[in-house]
Length: 246
Image (cartoon, rainbow, N blue to C red; front, side, top):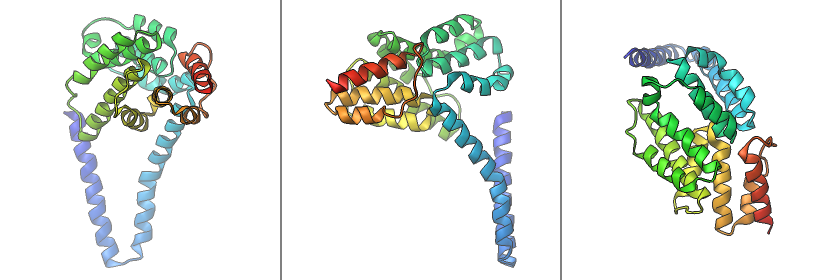
């Protein structure tokens, strides 16, 4: 409820600012420069912060990413459960199987654990994919897609739905059982959630290799980070290059 009130107040403030700005400009067009400056002061810092975070997520530097999350992880509700789960999510998103498993083990069981079904299915599906448990991964991805969407706003629900479809497409890609719309689902999930950009990118590369488009697959992973050996992406990258070159 508090979040909804804050959102309403935020939207109302923007509307009031827009109305006041329009009135000022109508009285004297010279106010347009002032209004533009004020709006830039509101918009630009947030845009720059979002851009920096996206670049960081695309870098694949999971330790640096987690470093930027530390303050948020300390403030999260039920930190004894959610902080390890969110940490496991980051590690899983970049292929660090052992680190993800260790953090899952650290997460306290209880009501918060049971409530975090979506988070757990997301992580478990990725880890099953990386560990070669393809059928189990597809089963879990299907469970994830069937979960009711949380009571969130339209755009957040849309983002969650895209991510769920992307995870299901990823599981099918690694099982070499892709469907016609999977490439689109993978691209959409990667754009919507940069945390999973590289996971989706490798899944797309597999789809392309399976369809005989080996050069396109190589181009897709050409700018990938230099993954450490602890990441499953290190092996995937080498395997894809070998497969595409043969």
